[in-house]
Length: 365
Image 1 (cartoon, rainbow, N blue to C red):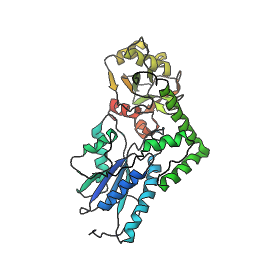
Image 2: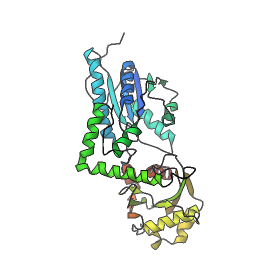
Image 3: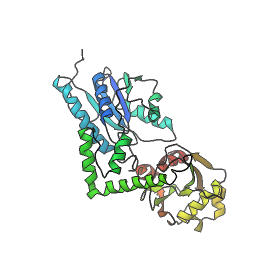
Image 4: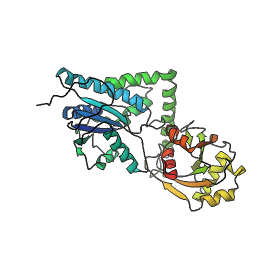
């Protein structure tokens, strides 16, 4: 027999009491589909309070993460509102809280701490059960919470969010069959937003990545790309460039690029830095080289770039001047500029790929 609790029909974030059973559901929901709906329904059947944690919540738009947290929250709340109506009709209340989770690509402990903190921010209960679809390597994080119970939804349909996005970008926004109506309505509106400008930009970038990968389709093995990037600080500021072309046109990034056939990683870092910012017009190459030497860290998250497997080597350069050297964007960079480090944190959603996570590691943000 279902336990009757106080009726609460409001949307938003709720504080649970100690006696409530809480389910936590982690996902990116970048194209909410029927398996997501099935998991939410399953969790609401078993819990008093469902906490939905939306991952990758502060990334710049790209074909893998095209929708903001607020946009995904809007779709999720529309879905759960409809699901909860059947419980209301039976005099039961089910609470749903939708909360953002940021990425920490190179620091699992920070990510775990954020998940735990978000859950604890809306519940006083210790009876927490992790739910979701434990389907493949993409849900490895479900094993990170031994202190919580586990109750996974197993009736998973064949569709995935990746397929939703592929159809959406490859067929001029044709909506894939079988999606929940809330997702269909959102995608139809998103296509026309800003006179179609946002969708057109994402579609063009999707096609760029597709064509980029097609260049290497005849190779016997998928290629591994090697790049060099520079984290340069001076007087409490970070040196940043604005990308001048695809992918990530207009986004903030670390100065860097692909290694040439006949140069070392350190030489690549220095060359790309000076080509894109002209820092060497004020800081001698010898000073830059001494700062880079022996101060290079590898960042190799397998999915860090949509171009394919890309391993970057990041050189940390600390300039001890009290004045910021003049710089200028050139080569692949539309602009180069100094950003106060406090402003870097506030603007994490403007950075290309995993560059903010790299900066966070290098500067211990």
